[in-house]
Image 1 (tube, helix red, strand yellow):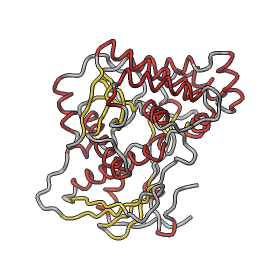
Image 2 (tube, helix red, strand yellow):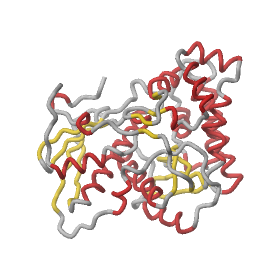
Image 3 (cartoon, helix red, strand yellow):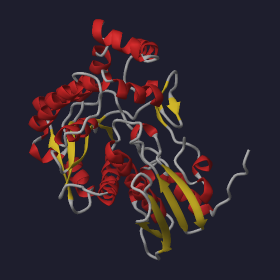
Length: 369
């Protein structure tokens, strides 16, 4: 076993707090190379080569933005200001950042830093009470200039969003390309997981979870259940339709201009993290709902994502439904979609890899196999 890397205690605390940043399916697409006590190289990577949801690596870039915002928040607790610059000579699939921490006397700790480890995903039902005006104002104010939030509240709006997620789940659960992703990212029989999603956090009852575990062992089983036994109905009801109805609101985060480049998505990720942490600070629970935006973009750009007959047509219908529910602004300027509401925090959740597992030497700075 390689000896543990020794780092500056302040920097260690910053990285230990920042590693709780959200990432799709808990992939944690980052590794840390410590140059000195105030300089870290963040080696990012994406999963576009094997994950249908990571279109052009943009969701991973959102996660890297959330990580950088988390580093800045944690640094503020130590009177340090963070400055990050992406290395222009690195390939798009390996976004790499030089991160420096500078002493800033008088810098007040950002109160959101206290909520970094507490922020989590709640996939189960939430209270249907409307968000208070003060909560919506605080969430809107958490966004940096250039971003705004659009709300979908009330019974009809929540039902429309829930139906969108229900139909979206039909596409996700009937395409073999997505099955490979789901099979690899779920840790069965677990309440917590350091590098995946524990099945107890999925939002389904124990019987459905046991059936899903057996079915998902092979695509042949999945296809049989979907074709002859309505195999997607129970998980779609429990993971998409009912949670979509039972919440305070759905929301859409919009950028002022359509994001085009890596830096745009990284900046959007920083905005998302501040919004999410503010929700946590307010005692609200949140669940991302990104995949309708991703499939809509596949359709909008006429890009194939599956070799299975009928999948492209399903996506076209979904894209039309997405525009009808979310509005025309969602086509291009949307950076994040989710639902939130009052309710208890998740009792099962994804954890994170230990910090020592995320520290690398320069020669080791490559994406994991």
